[in-house]
Image (cartoon, helix red, strand yellow):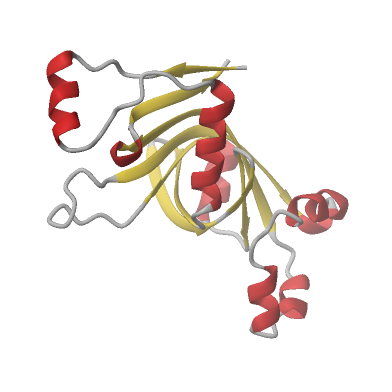
Length: 182
């Protein structure tokens, strides 16, 4: 179950946005909004993962794939795993290219707060295979002739379950609409 928070606009704001051909959404069902979020995740493949340990934050750009709102990252390692071992609370963001001179109101992006868990591929191969079926890069691995090499890597898998998501896409009527898992 999730709770949606949709910022309300006053009449003056509505009039300004209307002049710009933007109608801000005032209502959407949880299911419809989750479909919007899932679609946004599906259309991208890089996120910026923020972790923190000993009061020292770290942000790492990573390729990801998703199944619905659950996000997966395959990684060979790095400092983010020490951080995740100490603190499973994460945040990540994804955004579209933005040029304010081209379209000042065209900024589009997603902020996510969640809980991450990790495991190594060889420690639970069956779980890895179940997750990997959602991956979008198997065709790219084949194209470059490296699928067998990738199969030999004992990847670390990060699974991110969202707790809160905030989406901005004014052109589609979303002004910081927030989804929060309850």
